[in-house]
Length: 198
Image 1: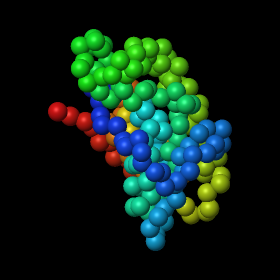
Image 2 (image 1 turned 60 degrees about the horizontal axis):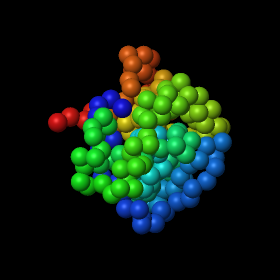
Image 3 (image 1 turned 90 degrees about the vertical axis):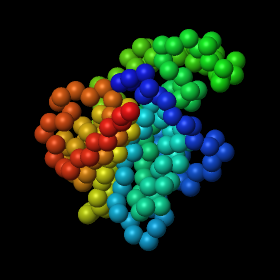
Image 4 (image 1 turned 45 degrees about the vertical axis):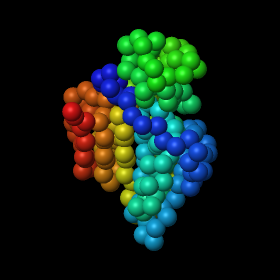
């Protein structure tokens, strides 16, 4: 993560009833939901934060579908997201000093080694998953369909990398992490980057 606050947030409702389907698509798990308004604006490729297919990302996907997009929320972490308990924890701090954790949550947090986890899900590996997936999506899309990419935090870097490709209509990267100067060069489509601040 870019800062110790990267993981902080509010978990989505675990009792939320998704409007779409969880399925295997082009060798990756995805949550797919179809546009639910009268006008289809195109396909939105959603590269999530470090929590993967967690309920908050599913809820966002359903909201984007209400706005007219077919959404593919892609499990770029291959079933190994950070546990939701991390949203209430600042990495590097003493978990035993937290009074908002159950004993079970404390054990979950203790078992996560962020260095090892980040090494497994390094940028080169994520790119090796995203690139062929996007090519398959492009091949299967009806002619004239617009393809958008959206990346939140962990997925933001990879959304920006897609802006360097052809066939992407526009890209949004919200508070992207692990950026390098090369990620913002040679962009071939409109890009919006939303940065967090205090």
